[in-house]
Length: 226
Image (tube, rainbow, N blue to C red):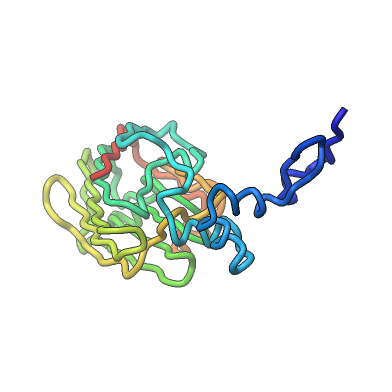
């Protein structure tokens, strides 16, 4: 009977003929020489490959989603690619005076994006892997009551800049240009949360207030890829 070493696959080996172990690089050389070259050139494996071919990332097949306040801890690979591809987010919520708290957040402190309220102002932040932080903030406060919020993001290709426009009840309230975006994912361990930012917080602005639960009522958050 062939013997398989515990954890062998995690060390970069696959079980071959009669139980012998073969490096994955040797198998890739025959089947996918371009990929094998990329994975061995810098010793970073899949990280290098995904930077060159972001289309090979693990991703969901869906192009539209409907979320509400019960949506928390949705793994990033199963969530919409809000930070890497063009999308349109719409949401409806009830706001209190000087509303505060996260409307939705994807990723974490090492990289992600978040839309939140801060003392009545609507704020969007794109945390580009800690290297850069881009923020769009409404000038005026939102009055208490029900509001319809939209976030439109346009990214022409993986890693390209993003044009982000925020509107409230059909009127533009802020916009920003993100200088560069993630081509694949923000993290391998963080998630999408609605109404709260669980895990590590995307924004330093509410680090001391984490998980920064929204103090109003979120009815829906809908996402469409463009």
